[in-house]
Structure formats: C-alpha cells, structure tokens
Length: 585
Image (cartoon, rainbow, N blue to C red):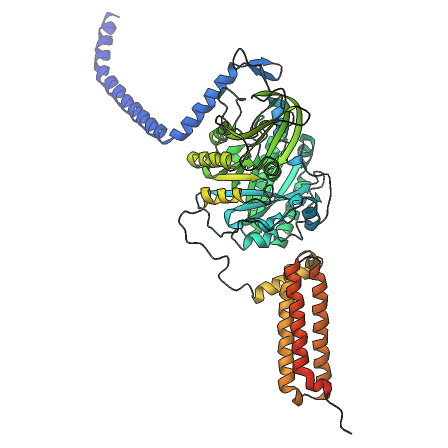
C-alpha cells in the first residue's frame, strides 16, 4: 500500500507537461474562436445596432404602466396621461385597405367621373431609376384610369388592387377592371412591372382559406391564367389579420405558390404586404425569405380612426412625445427577423387623418375622428405649404378652428415629410419604398418630382419616351388575339381602334391610288368588287369614329373627322372620271 502511494505523485508529475500542453492547445483554439467571433461581430454592426435599438425600445416598454391591454405613460406632470392600446393599433393597421368606396362601378371611366380624376396635369419626364432602389405602388381599382398620369419610369412595380379572394373556393369575388384595364401595357412601355394584388381580410377568412388545400390549388391556377392573359409579372399577397394558428399553413401556402409560379415560367415576382408590427409572429421570415422577392411593410395608421389621440399617421421616430411604435422600430424588427435589407421596402401613405381635438397642442385627446383624406384633397383645402413639420415624427400637421369653433388637427405626409423618410430609407440601406396609394395625388406633380429627385439616376441623359416605331406586326397580332379572346375590350380600350383607323385609312388611300392609276385595266366585275370593298372600308371608318367618340376628347374626334374628310376628298378626286362616265350606246 505504501509503495502505491509513492507512485501516485510520480505519475501526477509525469502527466503534468501533457496537461499543460493540452490546456495550451485548448486555450489557443478558444482564442482563435473568440477572434473569429469578434471579426464577425464587426461585420454585423448594422444588425447589432438594430438589435440594440429594439432592446432599448423594449426596455422603455417595461417602464410603461400596464392596465389590462392598455399601456400608459406620462410625458410631464403637467401633460395628460397618454393611453396606448396595442389591440386598437393592430386593428387599425390591418384595416387600411379594407377602406374602399361604397360604390360598385364597373368601368374605369365611371370611377374617373366619380372621383373627378384628371390626367391633364402630369409629370411625364422620362427618367431612369437608380438600380439600388425599388419604388413599389398600389393602384386601387377606384382610382379608375388615373394611371394615365403616372410616371411609370419612376416606378419599379405596380400592384393592381385587387383580386378579392373567395376564401371558401379560392376563386375571386371580383377582380374589377383587371381584364380590361390598359395599365399593364402602359407600364411595360416604360419598363415597369405589374403584379396582381390578392386580398383576404379577417382572421376567420384567412383561417378558412389557409386550411383548404383545394381552394389554394384553385386560386393558384386562376392566378396563373389571369397573369398570362394580361402578360403581367407576378402577385402581391395582401392577407391581413392572419391568426397565429395559421402560421405554419401560411408558410406552406407561400412555398407552394412560389413553386407553382416558378414552374409556370416568366420569372413571376412574389411580393408580400406586411403589417407595421407582426404582433403574433405569424410570418416565419427565415422560411419565407427564400421564396419571396419583396416584402412591403405597411408603415401607416400608427394614429387613426380608433386612436385616443390625434397624431402622425406614419411617425419616423417617437422621442418622448409619441407612442413607442414607429417606422424605425418596424424596419429594425423585420431586419432582425431575417429579411434581407434589399428585399425590404417601407410603405408610406399618400393620405392623412383628421380629428376634432380637445386643444390645438399635441399630443391632444381625440374627441371625434373626422376621417381620412387623400393627399390631393388635403392640398386643395389647406394648400401646398400646409403649416408645420413635427421634427420628432417627421410628419406634417395642420391645426385650426372650424366654423363651429371646434379644434381640428390633420396629420399627413407631403413632399417635405416624405423627403425626410426617403432619405432615412437610403441611409438605412434597405430596398426602397412603397406607396399607398398611387392616384391619391391625382392632379398634382410634386410627389412625382420628389421621387425623381430621391431615386432617379443623377445627371443622366434624358431618355426619349420611345426610340422605335410603335407599329409592328407582332403588336397588331397581339391586339387581334386580345380582341378575339375578349371582344368587349375593344370598347373599353380605344387605342387599338385608333391603330385600326390608321390601317384602314392607309389601305383605302392605296386602293384609291390603284383604282385611279390602273382602273382602266380592270374588268367590270373586278371594278364592282373593288368599289364595293372601298365602300365597306369607308363604312367601317364611320363606325370606328362613332365608337371612339365615346372615349376620346375633342382633339381626337377632330383628328378622326379630318381624316374622314381627307379620305372623302381623295375618293372624289381619284374616282371622279369613273363616277361621271357614261355607257356607250
């Protein structure tokens, strides 16, 4: 036993160098790993900053007093307590696109008359967007043909709003003017893509659709058919108020949709509208980012119809004045969740909100919500200069006393406040912006000029609106096939009629020349057929004139009548001797 005890320290002494070496090797590996982590963390400064901003905000929320679902905070001892109800904000943010006109017109022209849409004042300078950014805009069907005044060269993607989904079948309740609208061809001429926005609102509706695989299959097949018919470029999924129980089903649906559209070819775009805050973490971003091309955050209605206070619709920051939710926080949360910066767009409003308030200061208690107004209506009523810019939120506001001596506040975005937010988007190095909604500035050009200033290539040579002839046999064949598939489209889209008029006029003129020059060589039967054919062409011209008169302005009608008059004069000159000739006895 004693001998064994003597051997024990000797063994420990012999193993000591090996232990030191092993420890040294382990320490070296640990040092190397730490160095790699430090290097990696330096590469992720922007992400770390976003995480820190989020942690600071959450820490701030922890200091807020909670009563049921309501957060309260006090700015100063003199100022009133500010109530913040997250459920009210969530409901408000998810109801923006549900606000639509009660009217149900069936043509773009009817909507044009109802909303007094004008296409006379438009910013049409042909420009080129900086390839680093995307400008995405929704065109709601109730804006009719307002797209005729859009500067498509300043837009990357337009979403036609909307395919109203029937959640039980996957088909649509309505697609409005999608089949007859000229928006796709108009956008394509300037390199702008057009996607079809698909809407489904409400937890019950989304749960119903996302749990029905057959309805999803019907939807995908119907969507592909509609895209092919219009030669469109993809889809915008705008499902709002999705229950957390449908989280996995939503992910599977998007993956299935992506796979189906990829198989269909053409490189269809898949875009998704995201809520300002994903309260229930419905979107599995790390899964979806592989299949979605663009995520557009709906950055509006932070204050609105059911808010207890009047405030900015799209606050960039909160400071100590506004609720802790804002655009900065929304974008940071989505970046942290895993969306690639270049795939993330910040949607901003072309509208404002107005309240009757307890006073003219802010934040001020909302006594009554007056309503939402499009940008153009706000400018008509209050002018381009407006009143004031709130430095904290980066939003414009206007305060006044109405005819009944009630205090009013209206909060909105204009070229100044949007310019601030566009600059922030560029500093943040995310993918670009979204607009809800195009056409809300109809009749004004300053917001288009702002897009040009912020996102167009600088010092570029102005591009010609078109550098090659618009006539081609392929285009004429395309028009013919479209008319064959949907004959009614020729009534709602007069452009092919104008081209048909030009073609018939040219054929008629050629026929007059041939008859005048070589008519003496024709046999009598050919003369009858030839004259009859020319007469039919003239009758067709008259028919086209009357059709186009319904859709054209004064200048276009004058042009058509002038063409008809010229054709008549030429007919008389070229065929006069044949009209006055007498049969020999």
